[in-house]
Length: 230
Image (cartoon, rainbow, N blue to C red; front, side, top):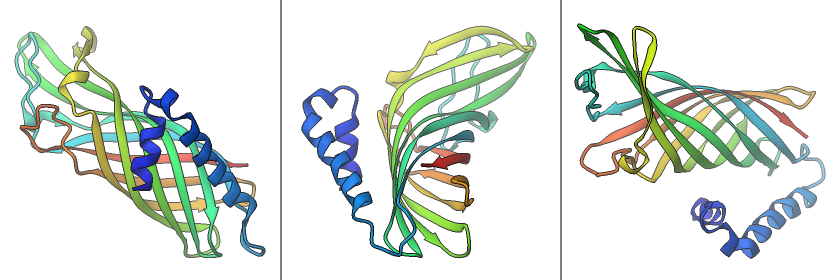
């Protein structure tokens, strides 16, 4: 419920109607930081960014192009990126909660052998991700994290290349994909004493990306992130 409420507040089309709620959430976060129990590691605010490997899984819609359809078994993983902010709120020496808000470029890719040459397609889908992680500190610097994530689709498009040359670019398919996605996040992190941290995690989406709700097609993302806590 917390994630759903936070997501409503930051939704770009209703943020002006929720100014009071946004101020309240930010105030609660900073109040929690100020009220940190003595003896616990410091709470922190940070920035994080990095690269991700994206794919779709399960059922796949064929992508129609002027060179012919690209079928499910030919979809491949593609690279994307992510960046945003987080709040690390320590509850004890061993446990912290971490709300985070990221922009993430996800999607998938495909290749098709054609008499015209090697045809490749790339689907690029930009999401605003709101996650609420729990971190378990298992050893000095090392931690495990897991939690839910809710994502809002900002835009989606595809390009088509033939023999490395772009022949179709920026075809908007935002309306063909689902507006919302939900996922489970889990991974491993390490925090350095100088404030830097590194994380390797996976995202397992469980709402279909198919905007027509006819196929069970899910986002899968592996993220490598570098962050800094202030």
